[in-house]
Length: 214
Length: 194
Image (cartoon, rainbow over all chains, first blue to last red; front, side):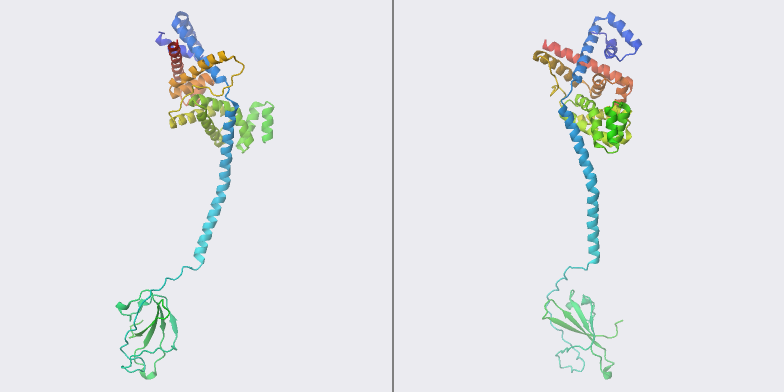
């Protein structure tokens, strides 16, 4: 066993880590203590061995490998720095172009197909202009009046009975011909043409305007 | 600028030459940075090898150290470069060992240059060196770092303290404990073999 109180100082002494006064004290102790001398000799031998091991060079290939990897990593990083701004600019340009096209260009989405409907012409209870009440045939000649196109849906027409509501029909309102002067007090009739998906089926609707219209 | 820096180094004007090299590397000169790496590669890879214990991890750590050096070129002065590299190497190796705690420390010496010895002497030396390096295993991480920097790299106690971010007193304590542990390990191992 060595002197426990001296061990740490001897370890520092072996590596030359003590100041002059401390080193002198340790030297005096080593002169008196064979075990601590052996300890110091063992420590010195170990340190010399470590320095010798560490002095041996690694193969040059290891250093070259590290340098090569570092330079490749730097080159890749630089390439990313060069490419990314352009990539971002290109992406932004594409996005801006898409927004412009979306805003400026009219919608190319095809109009939804109108529902096919089977409708029967409602019975017109009131004789049309110049017709007797018994005559139920509805003749709609080529209207002379103005044709007003309205945007669908035509369901806003108050004269359409609720059970006949046709939500997606395109409607064309045909202004009736001007009534004769003698019948001027009769409320005017309006005709609504309902177009269906089937071009062979066209629904005409006669509406009586009782002055509620604003 | 690169030419001036390289010429200054080649002409042996150390301080001014390396200042110029550092300046050129800061300006993005890869050849100058390569020169910096060549100058400090033994410091970085050698220290990392002793700290992490195997060459693969040591090369990874060295790569990370040099990449950090490149990113921090603007903040480092030539006079502080060595201390900075030691500090960063220790930190990077510390992180690497935390990520891979089962890393096998050095107990073999791959591809060391050992020429001109007779085989019997080589075998005895190799065994002794392997034993010394294996003794590093018994040290704590801080003790090992202190020992490697002080006794293998030859830094002063104050420089070791600076690199490890510790006080001189702490480093002296770590170094003395590390030396005693190593000596005990070698002695016990030798006694067992006898």
